[in-house]
Image 1 (spheres, rainbow, N blue to C red):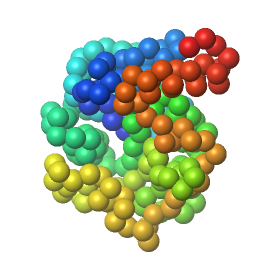
Image 2 (spheres, rainbow, N blue to C red; image 1 turned 135 degrees about the vertical axis):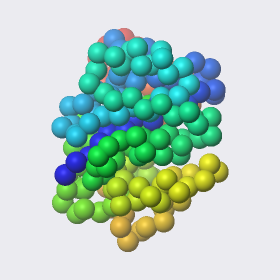
Image 3 (cartoon, one colour; image 1 turned 90 degrees about the vertical axis):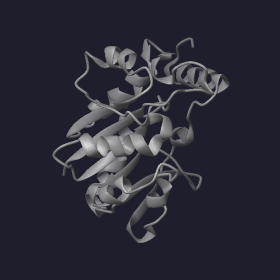
Length: 203
């Protein structure tokens, strides 16, 4: 079972006003916090998709064993980053674990839970839920690769993730962290405070 972790880090972070990936988070940056549990999860590989200010993020990631994909179409939305990863990653894996760069609360146990459910059920779409709401990361089998690659720039990935209920496994999880992202400065402040509380350290 070959699963590749994919971190979507190409966006411009316009609403944040600062580049999310490089925001300080604890003793590291946000992107490092997202990458680390993926590296610990015994995946076939971890790929980070870059776009806006790619060189700066690549410099931070340079010491880590990750593969970089450059999405030249990043201004056309997140779907283009998923497509760039799927085109670039060879050989084609069994599945992709898609994570967002602005979810630094991603944990190894959550990743392991999703991987275990995929291994046991072989459902093509494995999606965590909290209180009935879907979150990230999501696991997408390579059987949907061509369908994703065929999406137009105005189509979101949910065309695929909502389009195959018979092949979808929703996995209830104990933490609402799967729903949290950081679009605005106040989201970043809240994420820092939460992380500090969980780790008994000042934000």
